Image (cartoon, rainbow, N blue to C red; front, side, top):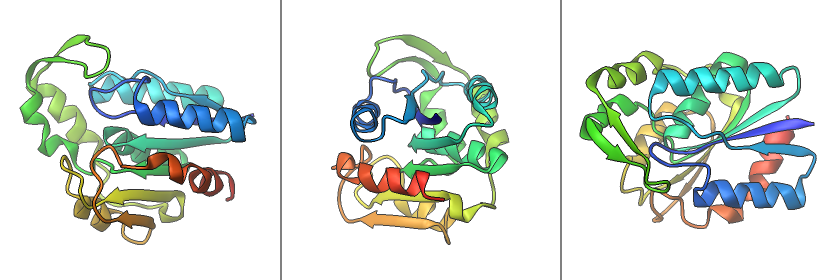
Length: 191
């Protein structure tokens, strides 16, 4: 049985709308793919270490990635390291640029959990930055021009040569995401 890791965005959780939609779709239409959405800490080193452990325990089974926003950043790091197929939804390209707004005490959007972000945590993200995409065939991007959090053009440029679906309008959550789940599945499993 193959494994699909859904990587939620920064300050989100496995209870995010897209995570739940993805889990429901795969349960109904692709039950042979095991879905897992781990709870990711807001700290890059802790998150990437957790994800590497999950992947290394799953190998040699096939592992697929779907990453939204910061989850797309982590999916890129992992795809490049392990040569995995990944679908990225409005991904963060260079997240260390916007993280200074998070320094201090924060509260998770969904769970209400409190956490503290310090300047050295921004450095953790900088250290993970992937300056060049090596495995372009491994990526499918879903971008919407109306993303109010991230400039879609950053991803469009960074992932040039990868499969990119660019929709006009929308927002950071990626409006009508669930309509793309059949093509996401097809992209991931048809290598």
